[in-house]
Amino acid sequence: MSSSGADVERAVRTALARVIDPEIRRPITELDMVGGVTVVEGRARVEIRLTIVGCPAADRIESDVRAAVAAVPEVTETTVEVSVMTREQRDALTTRLREGRPKAQQFGPDSLTRVYAVTSGKGGVGKSTLTAGLGVALARRGLRVGIVDADVFGFSIPGILGVEGVKPTQLGGMILPPVAHEVKVISIGMFVESSSTAVAWRGPMLHRTIQQFLTDVFFGDLDVLLLDLPPGTGDVAISVGQLLPQAEVLVVTTPQAAAADVAVRSGMVARQTGQRVIGVIENMSGLAQPDGSVLELFGRGGGAETARRLSEGAEEVPLLATIPLSVALREGGDSGAPVVLTDPSDAAARAIDALAERLATRARGLQGRPLGLSIS
Image: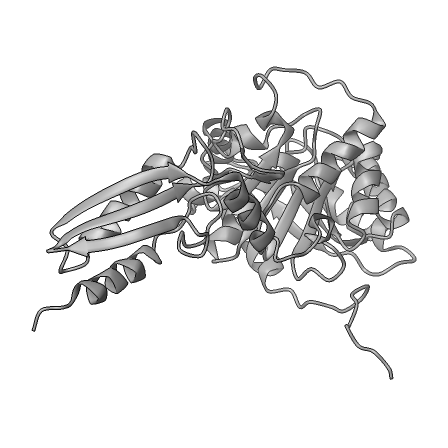
């Protein structure tokens, strides 16, 4: 018995539910992007509504739609008609995406997203490369991950993740972050003319930028949000403390004593804003030699010393990881392909992966979180 036209149309819509918008990461059927669907004698006609004119994902969406429809056995020919949402449809979509919540509450106190602020006392310790690799390693475990490049003056995350020059899509008052290696990413580097453009802003402008990244940028439901903070104890660190008091802080240092001294200060500032320092990461801990020995270019013990000093008179702060020097790690950052993907057997990749596993399996505490209970 042959299927009726209505049955085939239902089958086509079911197939379209498996087409995922590459920016929003939800089925196009949930986003009201599918209009009419008709099937006459095996010839299917599907109407698709893109979110905006010039949608960067248009070709991929159309290709995925054609493939999904063609996979329906009763379909012998597929026609896809592409249009653009009306303003009213876009407004309805943004309201639905935010689920009726004010945008300021995206990462509010009731959010289930784990927020990790990655900080350092000084520049040049590999904090951004570590943040990018950690985000990719967490995403490989099936977690939904976002990265905010909060280092406004020294932004480098887009280049490290291979999305330099990629612009976010703006949907009404909502900004959709690009996706790199399954990680949603936002950076001021995506809004300037080129990667060599210098940003020279004072404190209030920096605060507004970070605030916009946390409100206007739609990350969706994340398991983990990483913030790559600028080095030191300046305006951005204070703003993040005010905007995300529930964030947990990872302090990055190198083995040398000078780096450890300033790394301790960055942890102290986080505590002053009410954040919790959960661990220290020692980067550039040594370079393995062919004979099996380790060349300690930057000395030794800085990570352990930082952890010890941050634990004095406070909750114990562990040394979570030591990341060795690695040529593959550096090459991955230069090429936009993190070492955890390109060379997972590399010693630095294994250390970052082990750190991701440790963070992914941490128990979630209730400190500072509303319980949603009322006493009548």
